[in-house]
Amino acid sequence: MGSVPVGARVYVACVAVGALGCLAPLPGVRVPWWAVALLAVLYAACEQITRCRIVGHLAPKGMGSFFPVLLAGAFLLPPPVAALVAVPGALIARVEQRPRWLRRVWRAAQLVLAVWAASRVHRALGGRDAVVEPDFPYALLPAGAAVLTFCAVLTVLDGGILALAERVPWRGAWRGLLPRSLGPVVVHGLAGLMMAVLWRSPYGPVAALLVLLPMYVSCWVFAQYHRERAAHQATIRALVQAVDIKDGYTRGHSERVGQASMMIARELGMDDERTEVLRFAGILHDVGKLGVPTRLLRKDGPLTPEERRVIELHPEYGHEMVRGISFLGEARAAVLHHHERLDGSGYPSGLAGSQIPEFARVVAVADAFDAMTSTRSYRRARPAAAALAELERCAGAQFDPVMVGALGRALGRYGWHPAVTADPSLADPCGNGPPPGASGADTVVEQANAEQGDARKADASGRRVP
Image (cartoon, rainbow, N blue to C red):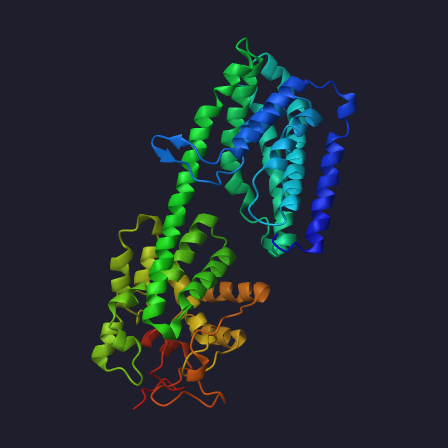
């Protein structure tokens, strides 16, 4: 929401009006102001705590919202009163991006609606009585329904703002939001229920506050996980940058192959975790080029059979480089086998058909597609439609038809906008063919097999250039 579109501003305003409607009954409700004030201050304080020394380490910033207090309010208080608890903390929360006031209003309105809906569901199912006179396991039923409602409201509202403010396609705006948020919110909901039960117990609010310490520790651990994930991504970026520096002809190619692989994965219905790993596979598929002599990667003119065999070792080099990185999972097999062919004539293992790992079949299609749709020193980029037609022509022999079809459907929905990856001054400005010493590759088969990241060594019929 850096520069917020008008539609997004209208959307935020509508959500804010809805939130005010939830708070409107307050004058006619008996409000336990001391409880509201205590919970509101507690929630605001939890949102403000971004660094805390625990077991000798500093918890990172950006640990996210601390929902147990809000959900405890939903279990303890009438809906409009419970919704009020979220307002002060949301309005004073730290916001890094502009416009800050709009983001604060959005967050406050979003939480008001979610807490109000959760409290309504909890009361409708008799949750209040189950908390006052602890009735387990029945108390878990209304609490669970309230948590699901809370999570669903946040998901619906988040998807709308992603579509309007971030320009995410409507079809994919809500994809994966609910599964990703449900687990953490359920844990927070259990902590909130524990707070509510202890609050109503003879031990009172002081005992309820003790629940927050282990919850804060768990949030810190979760933040550490995200820090580790960021470190993984930084490692991958460093490897890709090293490949780009070594083989300047294909700069940016790895990132685009990762993007195309992710498009295919989503079209195939893979879950978010596998989709992310497949994106890593696409990004890292050429990392083995770091083990290939630079003079071969940048050589103009035909490769000798010996030089070709050296270049064809790059999948094995890449696999050796990433085999110890456990979080890559299936991506490691894709790095090793992305040059296999369905007919068994590929390398390094000569696998055929379903013997080729699924991730490798996806990356092979994404790799060839980007090679054809990227401008290189020896030729201009092909249109996406022409590249897709070539993939379809080679489907069944070289490429998996299922993966080619998935890419075609994804392109039909979202299109493809490749960037120029070579110095334009190296290409013929009139489009008449490759410069001296290089040759144009017009078939996918030769592009995938010559592998310098491209195939500068073949003419339009696939013959070697003398």
